[in-house]
Amino acid sequence: AQKITQTQPGMFVQEKEAVTLDCTYDTSDPSYGLFWYKQPSSGEMIFLIYQGSYDQQNATEGRYSLNFQKARKSANLVISASQLGDSAMYFCAMSLFSGGGADGLTFGKGTHLIIQP
Amino acid sequence: DAEITQSPRHKITETGRQVTLACHQTWNHNNMFWYRQDLGHGLRLIHYSYGVQDTNKGEVSDGYSVSRSNTEDLPLTLESAASSQTSVYFCASSERRDYEQYFGPGTRLTVT
Image (cartoon, rainbow over all chains, first blue to last red; front, side, top):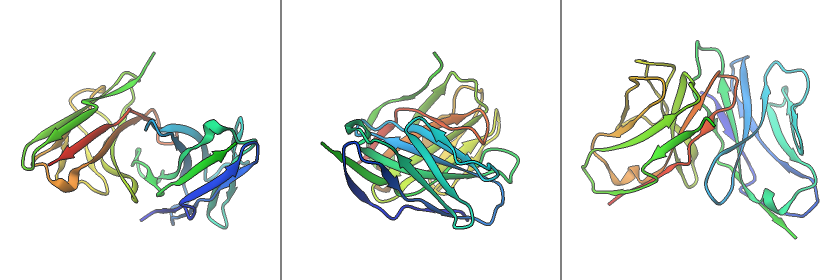
């Protein structure tokens, strides 16, 4: 079964600094996707970025980038120039594509990021 | 604009009662999912559906059931609510398995 590990329960970062949130995954399936979601204190789940296992380049979306190291099975989220509004829970998740359809996401336990002014 | 909604947003029920949580999406997505979120566990998959009349069990499906009679709705039923089912429940949908899932706002369920 697939597994996602986020080793940083909480992080404090100064505003405007870059942040790296760690995520490692475990699967024997060669075809999979990795996702990052943000959950602010209001509770909604906000999609940030996606990386496919066969993608050659690291994904980027505005201030978010995904540092994908396939051999090490890591998919770290990098937030450049952090802002106070980035304070939230961040979840790494994975979906396997070997089946005929969508089998749902496996989530890590999350990292609580607090941006300090 | 297309959206995904859940109702009720908050519910308190008693142990042993049947409870149904509604999920409605206007994205016209075939793939729909139910997750529960508990402190220390992240989100865990309860049930999912690839399309009408299709349902599948997820990681924590015991005590839950779903049915899919149309594309837009995937109601989640707790047959006999237990205190261990106190949680926040999220519904989600996606167009393709390699696309992001869009999440509803969540339902906070308390079983007393």
